[in-house]
Image 1 (tube, rainbow, N blue to C red):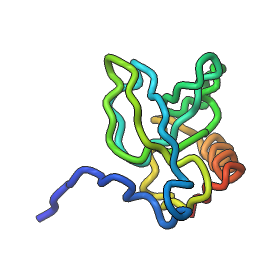
Image 2 (cartoon, rainbow, N blue to C red):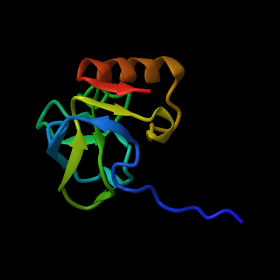
Image 3 (cartoon, rainbow, N blue to C red):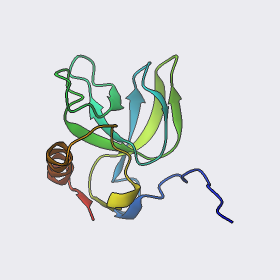
Image 4 (tube, helix red, strand yellow):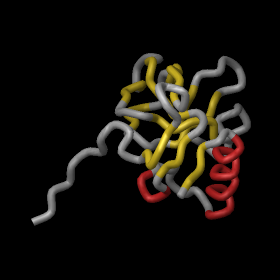
Length: 121
């Protein structure tokens, strides 16, 4: 029998810096939907709010800027959430990418995370 359990907060993290150094409180933009831990996020250039990565966009969300730490629902309103933004190692197979992302787009996003000190293993 297989039991599908929802992802746990921070389950995608292999290691992170001491204390809360790897994490920041961010604002998820209204309309981002229900998001799970490990969702790769971009930051909107207009207001700095975060939303799921969208490699086809031109509003800032096309660049990987963070990884959501826990479940969040930003369907109807902006919400505060914790995210990994620096100095961490994460499990590649537990990250949540946008549907239809190409291998090249994923490689670009991984490089963007690496530039922040977030290493995808």
